[in-house]
Amino acid sequence: MKFNQIEAYRAVMLAGSVSDAAHFLNVSQPGISRLIKDLERSIGFDLFDRIPGRIVPTPEGEAFFKYVQRTYSGIQYLEGAAKDIANLKHDRLRIASFPAASLEVVPRSIVRMNAAYPDLKIRLEVRSSLRILDLVSSRQVDVGIAAFPVDYPGVILERVYEPFCKCVLPAGHPKSGLSRISLEDLKNETNIGISEDLTIGKALILAGIESNVKIDNLIETTSGYTICKMVEMGLGVGLVDPLAASLFRESSVVAVEFKPDVKFGFAIVLSEHAIRSRAVDKFIKILNDTVKRSIYPAEFEPYERPES
Image 1: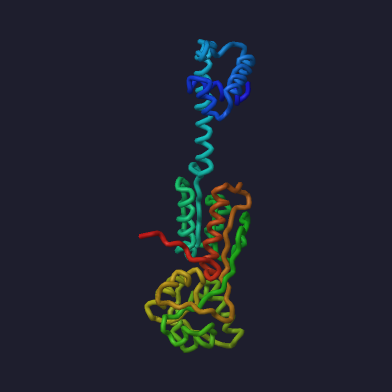
Image 2: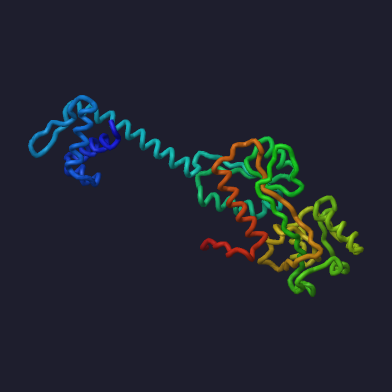
């Protein structure tokens, strides 16, 4: 038996005539008749009684049709299952993000992923970078985004980003119009600094030693977002990672390039031993695009805003 023979037979049974079946399948009537005769020879019994002007199913043909319909139901089930798999309906995506990325780039990426695959179940954990590396290595999450350093057994770096930090100032500040801010420019400012235990804080200390410029922080915190918020309130100025600075583009905070360069490194990380799913691959593409739009906005068109 061949599938096109079964298809022709089923079409005649459903349509009630060879001519209607031919029209339905967009083939000639002789073609339909030939396929059915070939099927009858293959199975060893007649499916129809030929009466002048029409054909009538034989009892064997009626019985055989029931089995054909069951087979087509199975095919339709398989088609539905394939569609569900293609739409990631039964998949689950587990993500872990360090705090700075969890404020916008990861949520925005999840929104975009949900728009493309609304049935995909997603879980997001906000953790320290070290904890994220542990979760990825032990395959408790599928995708991690963690700040440097990210050297950890069982973890691979899928995408690496090393953008430069920005100096944030209140709009209208005398130095907000400068093309770049230096350590010397910050000497007489109210500085809100990142903790010296973190990468940015350590880099600033080193830069100060190398340039012989000492900067005293009136206030110290571990969050770039918090620095931006206090700058927005007019408390002072500060150096922050570009992810935090990007959250305040439409506020009263101005982000200016800072010299010397202070890199803020982070990466998308995966387990070295996990089999990568389609959901992971698609999310990484979306996340990578979202990160680049956040830290290099001049290279991209703005996001389309949903209608209110």
